[in-house]
Length: 123
Image (cartoon, rainbow, N blue to C red):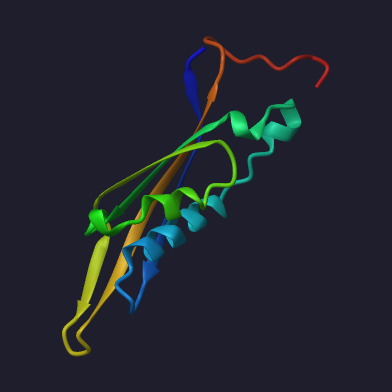
């Protein structure tokens, strides 16, 4: 059976003073997670660890993101993390600081049969 995306959540996060790309990404992932509640696992008797979670985070310096720390934000399933170029750096020339803004997309996938999904009549 093919993996099918069952949810996509987006989030943003920032680090205002530390120029920490990982911290901004962790906050973006947490923002995305706080927008979702995957009740279908309990409702349909599915195992939460059966899902595959693809996380994409975007910042101006993706090579400075600790992928393992980002993956640790996801509580269930097999987690794949990719850091890409994006997000936004806001420079304050007077203060000599850079505020980092990160974007995150969190997609959960399940191995489901092809065709329309029909709920059993007993539910």
